[in-house]
Each structure stands twice: as C-alpha cells, then as structure tokens.
Amino acid sequence: MNNYYGHVVLITGASSGIGKAAAEYLMKNGYKVYGTSRKEQADCTYEGSSGGFIKMLKLDVCSEESIEKAVNCIMKEEGRINILINCAGFGIAGSVEDTSIDEAYKQFDTNFFGVLRMCRSILPIMRAQKKGLIINVSSIAGLISIPYQSMYSASKFAIEAATEALRCEVKPFGINVSLVEPGDTKTGFTCKREFTQGSKNSVYEEKLLNQ
Image (tube, rainbow, N blue to C red; front, side, top):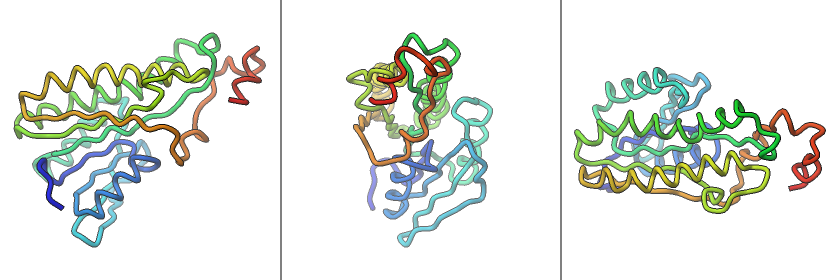
C-alpha cells in the first residue's frame, strides 16, 4: 500500500477499541505498527500476510520517561516514525458538582496532556524527516458536551483546540495534523469508564445511571 508519509506507525492505546482496530487495519495493509499499552506487552508481535506487523510496547502517556523509552526503542529499530495516532484515553462519569479536582486532573492527564506529551516527543523527529502525519482521536463530545461526562467532554474540547493550532504551526515543516471525532462506537470504552467518588448516593445518581 503506497503512502506519502511512510510505513512506520506509532499508535497509543492500541490494546483495545479504536486503537486496536486501526493497528490491525494498518498491519493488514503492510504497515509496521508499534502499538502501545500501559500493560506489559513487550515482545508481543503479530505479523500480517502483506509484510506488516504489530509490535506492542509498554507506554504510559502520563509518563514522559515511559514515552521516551518507547520512542527510543522504535527509533533504534526503524530510524523513523512516519505516523502518530493518539488513541489512548478513558472516561470519567459524574456530575460537575460530584467531580473532585483530583479526578478532573486524572482525566486531563491522560486524555489531553497525554496527547500533548506524545506530540512534543514525536514532532522533533518529524521535523527532521521534513514529513509526518499526526492523527488525534477526539470525540463527538469534543463538539457537543455530554451531561455527566463533563470532564471527558472538556478534555476532548481541549484536544480540538490544541490540534487546530498545531495543524497551522507544523504545516510549514511538511507535517499534517488531523482530528477524528467518533460518535458511539461498539467498543468496551463505556463499560470501562470510571464513576466519580461523589456519584454514590448523590442527588444526580439516578439520572447519571440512566443516561
């Protein structure tokens, strides 16, 4: 499969959901996919029939040290990273009133600052290559906020704003930046969402659980 950017792809959050589906699709089309997960999956490699593969690496988007280690591993093996797809994320559910500052920060640390850390790590590589593609996975919640998922929505709104600015900033260096804004998708995302501590026995609990 011909590609203007190249065939080395780094995907965060590739162990499930949209990240996993993207990794499998790209592998089947001959891409060298380095998927990441917070769980230990080093040396776990899947090979496709058209020369592509998925190699899973441990990477926590909340840790710059973890990001640096994974990126250095890819650069040592491939000497380049052509495409970055930021899929890692999770959801917190609860009313604004029932969401603590620590819970809100946890949501932003992964969903927004995790994307920021990844972009900052990869951009110097792509500028040196004079070419690259970054795809940030946002959500329809980044356009229309969802009640009782305010912090998740806010983190996605933030990704939208940062991505729009980034697109203009890096275009002169041959780097393109795109946003993906999925709606409801058949994944395990909703089942894995976390409820705020304040949601239990809250005046909002009934509506939260029935949304």
